[in-house]
Figure 1 (cartoon, rainbow, N blue to C red):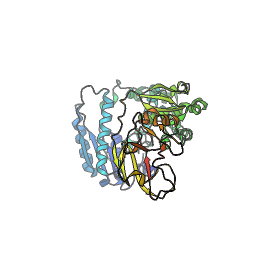
Figure 2 (figure 1 turned 90 degrees about the vertical axis):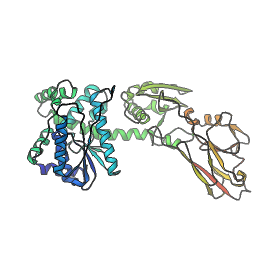
Figure 3 (figure 1 turned 135 degrees about the horizontal axis):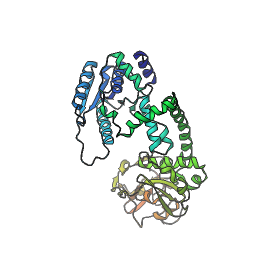
Figure 4 (figure 1 turned 60 degrees about the vertical axis):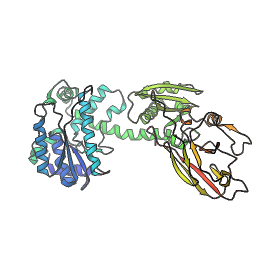
Amino acid sequence: MDPERAVEQIRADGLLAAGGPVVVLLSGGRDSVCLLDVAVRIAGAPAVSAVHVNYGLRDDADDDERHCAQLCERLGVALAVERPSRPAGSGNLQAWARDVRYAAAAQRALTLGPGAAIATGHTASDQVETILYRLASSPSRRALLGMRPRDGRLVRPLLGLTREETTAYCEARGLPWRDDATNEEGKYARNRLRLALIPALREAHPAAEANVLRLAELLRDEADVLDALVAEQLDGRGAPGAGAEREARATIPLARLQALAPALRRLVVQRLADGAAGRPVAGAARHADAIAALRPEGLSMLDVGGGVRAVAEYGVVRMERGGAAEEPAPDPVRLPVPGVVAFGGWEVRCEETPVAPADGVLDRAALGGEQLLVRPWRPGDRIAPVGLGGTKSLQDLFRERRMPRAQRRLVPVVACGEEVAWVPGVATSARYGVTERTRDAVRLSARAPVTGGRE
């Protein structure tokens, strides 16, 4: 491939930009050498850093390191070298090496600022191998999507080039590279795909690799449409009660889940499970029908794998990490009038406000001039809600508002002395509510925390 055409193609993709800080993962192989040179030509050498990891697992590992150092000196690029020691019991060697490599790059990127990208030398050839490997090992739609050009701060500028094209680029630019002999060993699954399966596919059809890539591209476009359909089912439809708006994308009414077409139901369940875990939960979608069959009354649960379980409560389905220790209730904290405090992940505010009956608006004089206390719910807590004409236990109010049990002990209870004055989304005490005699008022508000992968 003509180097100039390759650079223009990559520049047009927008993954690398002039002056944009970028950390290049540099192994010394042809793909990463090509990437480093392209990054320098597009972003400029001062904006580029390289990270090389010397695992010390091969006899020529130090030669690879020296090669990378010489290349970076030639291109005017700063190089950081990591020499990790593999701990005992670290499991899969390739997975450990990948984790170390990305961690080193992320650490380097932090020194360059929040906008720094991390670039890998994955090519179209790697994309084909990835899709075929995932297709064989993971029975899910996502297996066919392959690697995206951008994933957060991680970018893959060479996905439009084949391994043959990166080789031609390096040859044309006079850039030497190092070959890893282990890439020819058949003990690794990816190597077997490269050495046996892909050549067989080429024999079956000369455009086999191009067809795999085109299929993945089409499926990624369709995945965007499916993601929008899932979001439509979850957006703005959270459980009632405190924090309902925050929970809107993390819950779905059981009746709605049951009414969905099976394919869409699986996608919704997968989205909820991934959100709860903060990562993809393989195979969660296959439990969609069983989750839809959970009882609408009471509380029922179902493990979906990956340490996540589905919970049906008050006719609403949510996902949560299963088996983890119960999150401790936050410590009580004094709230000045006016003032703002943090309670667990919540932000609770007390602000001056015009006198008007509303949720959380209190008569300042009725508070007696003392600080309020923000604390967890206690068994036996009661409140006299505005308009009720009597008292009611918070537990009954939580139940009436269908607040999940796990949420009750974390929601802030604002007390004045020993009496409950306000609970967000639940009730305002009539004892402290504004009346026609109120001259000054304050408004209490609480912003819910962002946890469990929720937005």
